[in-house]
Length: 123
Length: 283
Image (cartoon, rainbow over all chains, first blue to last red; front, side):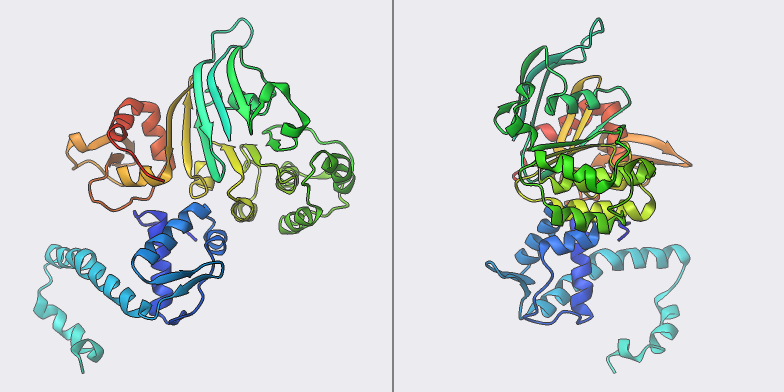
């Protein structure tokens, strides 16, 4: 995997977890790959993936069954949504607004694009 | 554990290389030893493996005095040098004659590594390319299950797929007992493998920190031209922009750019170390 963002590698790997959860590749109670398997897959130090797992465990997204491995929490999906929403609102939206301002795009200009996406209108 | 204490060393008739060098290496970690040409990296690795003796000071490896070169210590060390000569015999014969020196040598592991690197066992070592020889030595070294693995420029000569295989093999071979020391200039190849960065300059260790604390304390910016000077610890001209190291104030762990870190440490070790000084990281 190519790491590009300016974010620590363990957080970038956490984002891969989030993607898999949001795309429902992993469901509640599913066993997730081990710290070592993830390290081999991403070609990073196992201490780095261990930080990813600690981070996800702190957030309540995965839990550890001693000697068996890590599993996706029952509310792992909901918690992931909450984290990603917060990230979107706090980090991505300000950039989006800044770009709108720089490019002189008004909210009204977006309406045409939004109406082409009925799922964004709560319909 | 490897412990170098108050090491003094000079090559004959030359000025001293190491003056009171201290370094501790803990099991379970991969140490990246970085330094310019002639900084003393290979000399340091030779001290650890008992190939050079300090003029004064102690170098202990798993409790053994390295310079005593006891077989019990030597079977726990494997050194892959940058330059090497291999005899004109088959891989199989080499393994048969050299594997016996390592009591935990695993033939099964070796076969798995050779398969991963696509090296045929009946090939003659002398007919292999430099990169293939290197891969053979890496496979052999890992199969010895030595607890201390020292690699001088391991990715030199490896083709693109082999570099990725190398990283995967290293990651799967690491356990909480092993100490891996990798000396390299190819920082991009190994950036995500290293968890402790040790920088050697003119025989002195001028920087020695864990990646986790680095990513928490420093941030590596694409362009620091508009940043307040007090925040910038190091900057370098990069094709129309100023890449730099700044104090990490955002509270987000940053991705560590080893190349930039190395350049920064060489130019401004004092400033960067000072930024870490008031700070203790728990790990």
